[in-house]
Length: 218
Length: 318
Ligand SMILES: Nc1ncnc2c1ncn2[C@@H]1O[C@H](COP(=O)(O)OP(=O)(O)OP(=O)(O)O)[C@@H](O)[C@H]1O
Ligand SMILES: [Mg+2]
Image 1 (cartoon, rainbow over the protein chains, first blue to last red):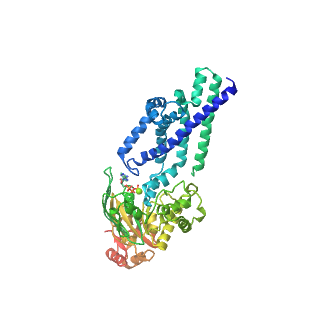
Image 2: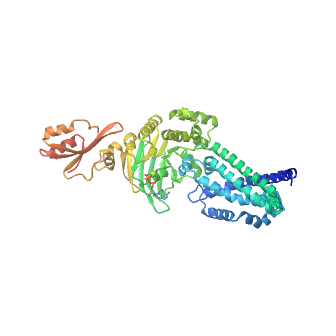
């Protein structure tokens, strides 16, 4: 395949990957953050101890974390159809991507929030702060750099997942690499997609690190 | 101002951290609680603002029984009780000014008012030039000053301090203690502090209590305690080898007789030989107090001791 032929295909694949990663990242942040907060606050000795809620939530998160992405993706196909009306294509891929990444990010959020000292949380409570205030004005702002770093790791994982989603019809760079590079033995396309994926990951990591550094005041 | 009665705290682990504690902190005084590690000091302090809910007993601050309050009332009551911490407990993500503003945000103080109040507070603790700095850029002493400014933001009448100087070097400790003393006199602030450092009790406390195994063993005005036979506080402030050697006498010069020529009078009047076995002299809130262990031989020993008692010296011994 010539470069002129490859360019539009490559462009479209990149756009599809970007679309999948963007939306699933957004949804992962929106869902993973509150779940991570709940994992910490419902703990024994947490802000709102609810051991039963914590046990159930922890178990669900662990199930999500223990399934290999490719298995999860196939296992939830009915659910994906229910939500999007289809199981093929970029939009359909966003469902398993999000479900795969939410437990991952929730654990990262949990770990970050646990790093906030007990003394600091108590200081806020001693000032008469509500529990919601402790979450919004202490836990989250204090861990913002870690939350951003965690999200960066999650985006990178999502790029990798999205390549797998491509294998079952999600489109994107992974799909391209498999269709041309693997099935048609077009090494050139394979190399170009690999390079593109590497560049994408590098870019995300550098960007994420820079933001996290800017936010840290240590 | 703070009244604690029959306070018990049993942790879930079965540890009895407080075993029937009574404590009375009067308005405008600095009250120090002394005790070894694990004595229950932190638990006691955390029960005063109900960070820890006591198993039984009552906690009254400014006439209000905190143990019966609902959530919202308790939060309001807490805004009237400041607290400072051993490791400062500042928010790393906020500037000094924003840290001090935190309790005002909690109290929903309007922004403009917050700004003037923060400036006032930073001036009070001598950190006006650090308003825009982050905690990581401050020394330990400066961080504790921010902690103090923050604790005072909502104009509390009471300040609780959990080992606020334990992470600081001796010089910085003195400057923080001096600041606390100044706030105590200028603002009429009542301070309840816990510490394991004698230095803190010696230099700022009007009253003190000694805790062991979840119980208060003695409490009262420091100068009254010193004048009391067998007081634990006296032994802590003036460590002498225990038990005292047989025949020796321990003299405590509590009421400012330290520095008076009591001993030379003793030798002259009663013809006794005095050997000094040990002793020390301390400034307690600006008053010299001394403790001396001596052996008395020959002459009219009994009359000599009576003479000392007559001069207001606390005599412990044979
Ligand atoms: N959250 C807790 N759960 C269970 N036991 C606790 C808890 N906090 C304290 N304890 C126990 O209660 C006892 C009193 O502890 P506390 O922290 O009040 O002592 P302290 O006098 O402040 O000691 P230190 O000088 O070391 O700070 C100790 O035996 C401690 O192990
Ligand atoms: Mg303690």
